[in-house]
Image 1 (cartoon, rainbow, N blue to C red):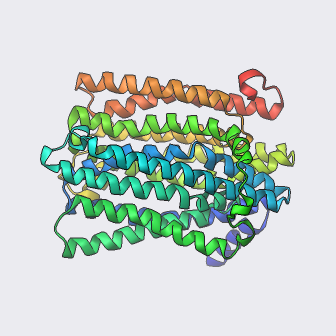
Image 2 (image 1 turned 90 degrees about the vertical axis):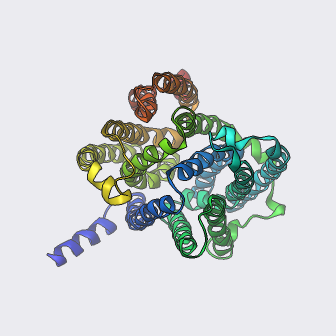
Image 3 (image 1 turned 60 degrees about the horizontal axis):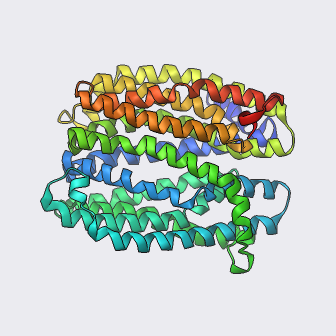
Length: 455
């Protein structure tokens, strides 16, 4: 039996198209790392929850979801770099690839520096206790915490570009390793804090935020002095004339990212305002639980973004269609797995975070539906993104964002749906995309895309 399994794994990793083999090896690596990351992440939730309390933990989740808005400060340059870097490497244009890298680092560093100065100037005037629907006596702590978290998130945008380069080079497993190391570092330090330091929301925020910078910072030194030495950022290779080239695609990614961030980050804020920060905790526990399947599926998809770009450059349509069929078959299996997760959800929550946190069954069902919708759409949007045909996705994202918030507020005001209504609103807003992206992909592959479908 062991011999058969070994032979199967060997054939799986050595047979097939070279592009597919590279993707397979990354998928295996991603699965191994994601398993470890999931374990660490799951351990981190009850540890942090018990160290703080449901209300303070909800405040932390809401604050971070608001501050993640700064990720749009790269104005889509990271996404543009991902595609342009892949294209340059596929053509063997090393100097051009290095210029793309150098320009991206320089431009984002400039934008981030201006953003940090602006935030530090206005932060003293913001009333964080009011924004987070928190006790007024937490105002000073929350203001200091917001400043620290914002600063570290800004720095992560710059140093995190190494992850973009790894993914563009079809090495997403290595990028995922950085996430694992970040979570392990956070888990170890917070565990030590539970034994040595009195409960402190500020220090939890400091530890978790600093870990997201420290790990990619070390990774930058490691890779640019090793495998990617030929692409190391240099002032000599900075060409701001390339910013427009990167952003011609990147600006569309930027708008889509802003809309997506608006869709997904407003949920915590709306729940906090209508139901209080404590209600954010069960919402995020359900999301983290069902998010396991989304993470698994995205691990499978991630290597194919850059692989699709390479295949398009080389005109390998047959490989793209064959790969897409296999991905859809995997999604059908995922549906069965998610249904099983719904059936055992209550028992898992009890074992994981105890009986003090109640996650409504309706929330679990709706969250499962949300995960399936996102996964299905991702099968096709990854290809559309790799092709750089983003105009339809751009307009759809804006409309979905507006619709989602309007429905979320309407359901929240009724006070009958609770946090279930917030995620149900997102499902309703996203549902038309389940049909739009498959149609666009088919049109692009058949060469029949015109108008907005081809832009």
